[in-house]
Amino acid sequence: MTTDDIEINIMKLDSKLDRVTDSIETIKDSQVDMNQKIGNIEKAIYNPDEGLYARIKEQDAEIQDLIQFKSSVTKFLWIVTSAIMGILIKFGFDLSG
Figure 1 (cartoon, helix red, strand yellow):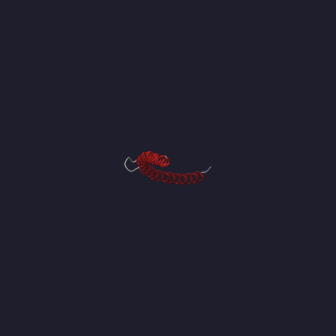
Figure 2 (figure 1 turned 120 degrees about the vertical axis):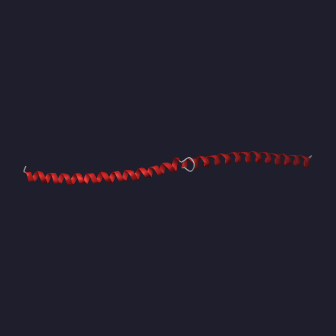
Figure 3 (figure 1 turned 45 degrees about the horizontal axis):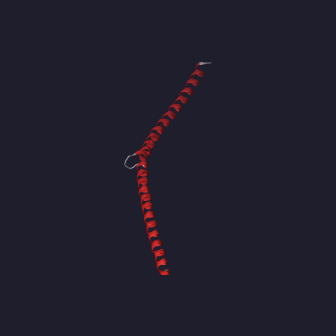
């Protein structure tokens, strides 16, 4: 191998190293951008006041309130229905007897 061949190989290697370095810099920039986006997603999910979990917890509390309200209304309606049926049966016996 001659000196010219060695110099050509060194220039090719230098060119390839420059491309690898540029690629690494691009990857670093992409990672920084991705890290910021992941941070924003994490904030949107886990923020204790406005995050996804806070909103789900709030919705769950509202659902529990609605379930309790429905249960109370259902009990009340059964009581009213039973009272009306009792009154109708009493009127039926009063009219027939």
